[in-house]
Image 1 (cartoon, rainbow, N blue to C red):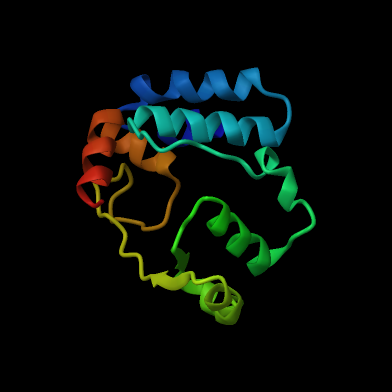
Image 2: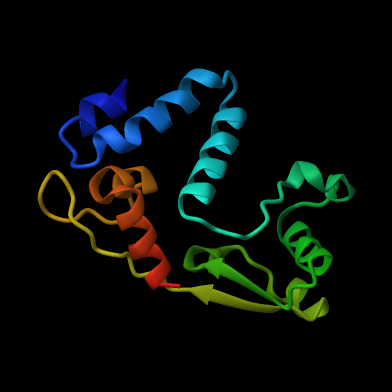
Length: 146
């Protein structure tokens, strides 16, 4: 397994690997693995936000792209949609304006943390942070940024 090969010497391998291994062994389809992983990270970080998946909202099945996002925002009474900076290339602000939703862009600056292999490499998976900082360290680093 790639996690073992790449992270066996990481400081929190023994803490994190069994949880990931369990997910990878228990699921058959990629979607099931992704959902299990999302739930695991949600729980490990102690997040209280309710997780809702698009499959829980069948009324939006025919919508696509910005229309879908705006409809979901309206469904949850959101008055602002925070998009990644890359969304500037495809977001249609008029769709959000029409619904009274403010469209904002997040210019994300990565949180620097110690990594196993030397110089910091940004934008890796949270798995990297968990292996290098542990559950508690990851929680502290991420939640102090919120």
